[in-house]
Figure 1 (cartoon, rainbow, N blue to C red):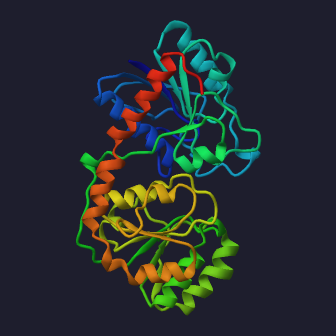
Figure 2 (figure 1 turned 120 degrees about the vertical axis):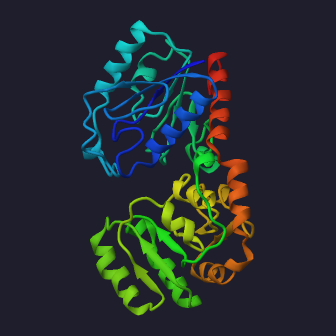
Figure 3 (figure 1 turned 30 degrees about the vertical axis):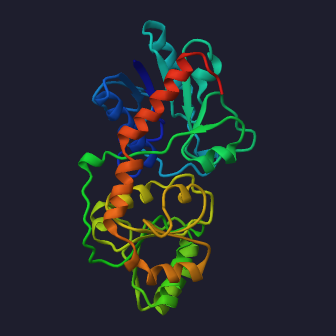
Length: 336
């Protein structure tokens, strides 16, 4: 099958620095190539895949977005549309897999080629797309309609893991109210358990007025700032802690933890319950009391079970196979 994979325009694929969704797209393209498909990746400069890459030169990979916070952050996708239009006037593909935000080509020319559209964020009011694929069942139900979903996967053949853990639990996320590090700190204080906070400060007021005072009170916790990559920390940590106070569709760092054989302590929100098996690969919590209890019960979780579950459910090969099934349905003329 010849597949045109259209990545986002906000970073290169794979990303320079932060870029969770661009990593997902890269893992997918590589898995599709290994499965024998002809893959063309369309993405900003510095992007690459083991198939063929078409660069959209209008986008600057030196300016990588860590988040799109409002309309003022949105880039025009007209240059991407023009690049797709020009490419598809001279080359035919069996299916288009569009990860962009605005999906201009498939919306303007829905009959030209079979297509699927992937989304990784909670929907804006009025958001509608044909052949839409979410990243979790909870995400699909939030969008509504006939939205389908495919879980993300990791290249586990190359992913290191360690079952002997020697470092304290770690909370990895940008420092912001919706990541709610204060809940993790309060749970650490209640249980008397050590905790490491890692992440860039996105909200200085939250950090200075809430997190700093709690760190001063909590002799078990420390802040290590922004980290370069999660791998080294997750290999050693006794657990990953996540306390989202918004709808986190399918947090990538949770998959990275399980792949590293690291249990997960998390608030049961968004797509997290589809990632963590309560009592087997971690604990799903409802508040500070549950979080504190989970710290105390970490010894009940076998790190090897975390890695085994990741291999069974969250490999790049599984992700690619699930997407190929949707490609085939789109090629057969199905619309959802």
